Image (cartoon, rainbow, N blue to C red; front, side, top):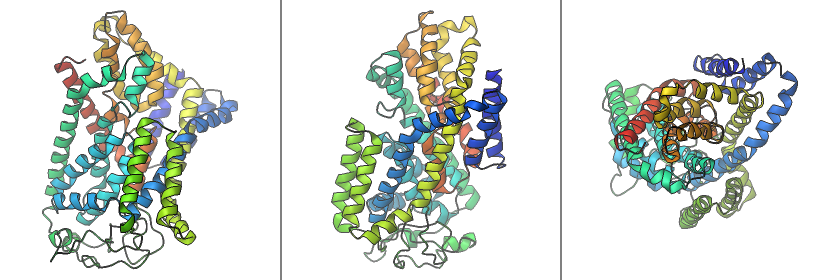
Length: 484
């Protein structure tokens, strides 16, 4: 009964948000509450929610202060050189833009944190997608899938969980998987190329060279774009009301690239802020301080010198104090990113209701046991393949902790009975991560869709098929190379 209700609850949630009948926050709260009552455990709902919130509170804190930190770094101009480099490569070609999105997401994913990856990627690419009239779900889908493949890095989480659960060395799991994961990443780049060609066919070739290429020794980047309702030809000509390189009034650059609006409305499309090279928030004299602080922060995060929420809390406080010593400026920077902070934190705590009920009622355990029990006896010698296939739905419908600590040991035990090495089982368990990164239970995905102003349902509908195909490519490559 709990198995059926568990699948029904997840299916109801996905259908309602994809059909846009409910907002993700409302669906994450109300649907599990109703199902908790349906299983006769309504009296325990409060306990389940508090337990779920307690487990996700550190994640919410990390995301809140990470958004503030990287928002400030965007404001001060730390990522402007990256943006200019990407713009020079992409120009006005949709194919280059989508491929550039995949490459940027993959590179930034080396820090092992999905939220960081999405904040930087969206901040760099969002203005370009908007200016060219490209589909934003293409951006979110490609970024999430690329990050999902890179999420298998030993410091990214899943590999460490698999190693801990099966008492193995993380390097023994990850290093042999590199060729298969490399094939997965190449597939993402190829997918980005195909999607880019589709976008090019849809919107045609546009001319933005006068905006994207420096003129007469001056260096310009996209500035605040206006005229959200302007036709495509007007956008292509850069005639949206902002001349290339034209200074933005003080404050108009606030939240640049972050999808926020601090009240400086000069006719721009809502939240569409480019990285104006003349924005008042820039701190060029502190560039190397900010770069060093960011490197130190990411290094401390990888080395696990302190809990990640604490690192970002300290980093955000230090960044604000040094770059904006004036109290009013500090408040303005915090206010500029408040929308993103509230949206993401609210989504995380709403997800805590979903995961709390799913775990507390025992639905997750019954669902996992049913799936494992449904494996035919004859599939025993192929448990690595079975694990790889199961990792797609299981890591999508439950947290990585639930899968790696609850289900993986059972699969490994079943495989060991048929002579299948735990290392093979552990490697196979990583293939579903490309799909996992678009799961409604992954807090970072709400950073992605929130900053890109994309409906979660639209992102899910577009991304799931491509992410699942990417995971299957990794699995096929692992089998072909004899890794799995």
